[in-house]
View (cartoon, rainbow, N blue to C red):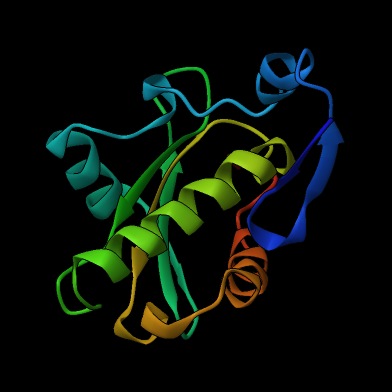
Amino acid sequence: MQTFTFYFGYTVLISATEDKDFLRFFPFTRADRILKHSDFLRISRDGIKRQNRYFVILFCRTRIKGTRLGVTVSKKVGNAVERNRIKRILREYFRLNRHNITDFWDINIIAKKEAAGLTSNQASLSLQKIFDKIPVSHD
């Protein structure tokens, strides 16, 4: 038996044979990411903006089926280690909570300078509040 502890306090006890099957429930593949510069520009131009103390979230309708995530963390936030830690936390939150988002959205999360010292639990609470602001439908 192995114990997996994810960000935000999720702890799961599974056997080695269940190891690969369990991770399939929460995939985060290349298709789930926003990678093209033109997509980031479209979200910035046409998207709806919500923010709190730590993050700015821009979201708009997607042209494809499925919700995708883009993460932007500038050098103002901190050094490479800190920026990569924040990106891991954001991706992990999205991976574990994507099922709560209805409809199909392209979402870009921009970390503010204040996000540098956040713990994963603080980031989770902040992201939950801001993700609750995403509308239920495209109306």
